[in-house]
Image (cartoon, rainbow, N blue to C red; front, side):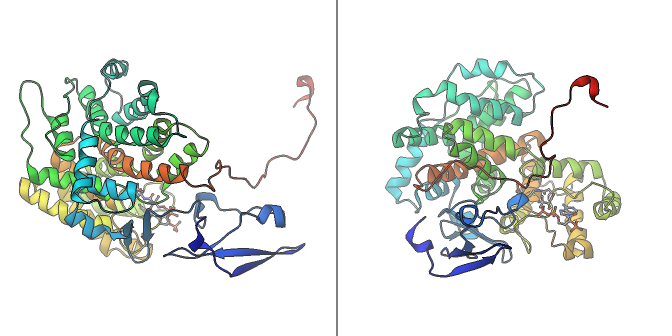
Length: 435
Ligand code: CMC
């Protein structure tokens, strides 16, 4: 815990048997936190917070979110400024090292990343073990976890140099790994990375070029994709990042930790929402069917939810969605595909939901996954690639958070407790006496 978090104030908790004084800590921004680390030792009770809605799980200097005001800062810089002026690899440097790089630092960083873009040739055979119809996320979880078998010389978490190399390897190779998962799923040969291309252009080419015909990267499309990467790069202690930290807290190697993050991201309540949102738009099919789905979303007895709407933290608007909405309009205009039926349903659904009392009252706005899905659809990615692209983008955030955790002297294995409501002790019953 750093010096600046300490505050002389305390909070008093009156328990039936005794009162406990708890220190109140404050950060540079955001609500104060009550430090309950000694609560069990001093008061003999646990706290209960399923879903961690009121729990700060760690101290971090990387990303700040104010959900009520729609603020997202990476190392203090507003996301809107970064989306307009920066690019993914510069933001990656910022997230990893805390400050924007100088021109020389950026050049060196980009060169180091670029030099690691190829994957071990033997990994090609590893891919071939998957069924052709495997979901690319299933392949990503497996391949990233398997990196610890291919790159054993960067798995010692106690060696800062190995941690650095593992970080470069993952940031550099994750586009190659995602593109290979896509190519494998459509039965096309893998396309090797090209080091003269920028991060987003290289990924586009590895996805869409074939040996018989190269793919000319449109800079406007590359810029739109890079913006998606940048906007998804980090999001403080979300479910997948917390998973990475929890996995890492046991001392697991970085490749295994990032694989755990990818697994968590896959769920439809998290990164899987972009795929689920597009599938939902396709299922709705035509604008006249939207009211039926709005009705279902409001019906308590129907588990259906409007995918791509709502957020645990943002209760007014998602600043990333605001940037991507503009980007989506630009991309659709550029590609001249405003008449695509799925995209028409998306636009109309957005309009209706934003005017509907239920969604207004519950503060359910289109989130980042709603618009990223629309853009990725327009760029020609199949829906199954949407979440792998989110994973690719978030890799740098996961790594920055993992590195921060490893070098935090107060870091301990993550080990929550529980409110036990199962049976009290009872004697074993021999099988012939059980009813
Ligand atoms: N459609 C219809 N109703 C909804 C929706 C939705 N998408 N989201 C929340 N609600 C309702 C929900 O039924 C509940 O109503 P009530 O108070 O009457 O019980 C209320 O709004 C609060 O919902 P909650 O589930 O308690 O809220 P949460 O903060 O736990 O969940 C969420 C946040 C993002 C999981 C949820 O809004 C959701 O499932 N959205 C759809 C999936 C999605 O788009 N996820 C991507 C999130 S952004 C990117 C990322 O994190 O990866």
